Length: 331
Image (tube, rainbow, N blue to C red; front, top):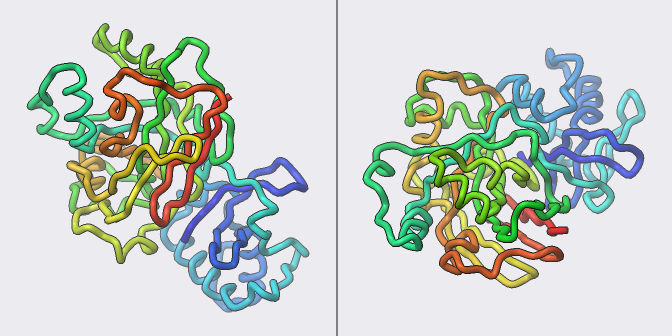
């Protein structure tokens, strides 16, 4: 499934949908569920959650029923069925607005898992990668309250003159778990989406000299989207390690490609990241884990820390196969 959070021209409420790219439609899951219950002999919950976090937390059984429902709808897209309440089952994609698929995750940990990016970042400072980096995947906590989505404008942070993007993959946790072994971690993955870990490099540089951070260098905004792809859609591209897939990634600024990489270049798999993040703590449904920047996936790396940096008016587009395009304009 490709799952989205969307709004319609008729109102400001957010809804959960499933994207059908071939037909260019978004299925309104709650409306479709009403039709499915009325036309199914299965024992189904009366209501389906209409927000992404609650849908994730509803459990594997409900999500499998949603997949069966979407399969039943597949042949009805040309003649949409009526719901008992008279609601629309699907909307043309061009008529809706996509938001961050998970607008307010419970937590957001961002890792540092692509070796090429780590090597280049340290080389730009005249240093070798510290041996501790190879001990275990490391992460920092960022701000789950500052998530923006595809098409949202990014206000330039007032305290910075060196704004940067970071091309990353995000993994979303499906169910609670503690001390999860890497080889069992995929059982706890709901899906994946693109992530832009916006960075104020000048702010980040001085605050980390104190021995803490990054904090204000990062927490002003993080982009997620445009949709969440469930692992079943990626199975043919699995790279043989937990949570690693052979998918090309790239970034563009104002339509010009400036970065390219591949998800499979991860030094630490998402399985290893989940094992580390869950050590002696509980991960919860909806928790987001970022991969860190793919090699060449930021201006800090591309320009060796000298800039030029992003400016108001710039359009930044991150893209990965299957995961789509995550675009934001800086204002």
